[in-house]
Length: 320
Image (cartoon, rainbow, N blue to C red; front, side):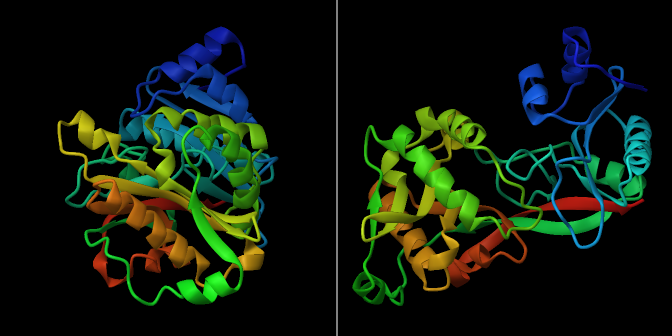
């Protein structure tokens, strides 16, 4: 086991450890971990302890970029990662999380009866046991739910919100790229109270979403406005993995929904969600996935009784 430098050779070796997703040297550099650990060919992780989220009275350390080929390698890299974070003054390790909840984090811990969907994180089924074997325990659970009935409920308070000056519209063709900065401005406010929140730069946000544009239908990205001022958004995207499996296009993923804090609690998020579902249904989609919702997030209620959980993900922590 060794701590690696940022040299091209070390970064190449770090990224070469086989895992479910490719990790590039450019991503490692952009994520700016405070240290990187490598068990050549068998395991790796990155550590963050400087720019980390607040959690209670703990001094948090994050462990991410995690890959291990077996339980023995996992125990080595996780144990050393915890030891290094303890030396850095941390009192609690949380992971897997690649430095921020805007990036890859959590482990898939219950697969359910649905195939993987587009942008869903995946991992080998034995990885949760790796973390449990190294003394980690769940600190948060997340769920994805499936909505089979996309018929809008009657109690959406649309007339009341209209009377308050709210309106909802699709971004429209050719305008999505320019709208990403607007969406970022809403998102950094809307999510600022989320569990383990840290800010994301405009550039990282825009770059991440720009990569998705070839798969996005702008009719499925809706803005909520009041008096012409954007105050919320819903970013939905077709499940392109289904098409790659040769299935009929029928599932839309409700990837992200955010309402500016000053406009929350009025039913606007629920109306925005169902207006997006209506747009999707008009385009021929018959199912919606409410993706990767924190167990305590109000978004879990958006789909109503017709939404059923089919996947669970877990974030872990270990006291130091």
